[in-house]
Image 1: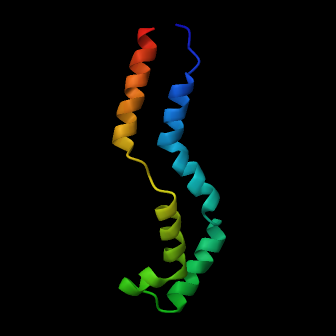
Image 2 (image 1 turned 90 degrees about the vertical axis):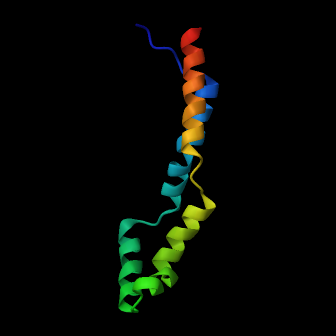
Image 3 (image 1 turned 180 degrees about the horizontal axis):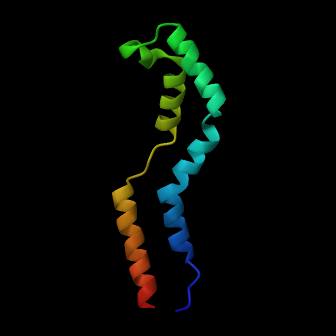
Length: 89
């Protein structure tokens, strides 16, 4: 069985489905920096609901809110339709 090159439409749908992960990766600070932020938040007594005001939490929350996760179920269904059409060719 010969593998076909994915269509542009399929590649675009895959990017819509997974692109947010790559974009978030570039925005997250390194692990050492994140651990340092957490240490400072804990040292400042940021526990329970107070933790929601910590530097680390606010940074990660901002990244997740500005680089939102798409509707995975809808995009997966659309991708499956594209794959089905490609296989019918």
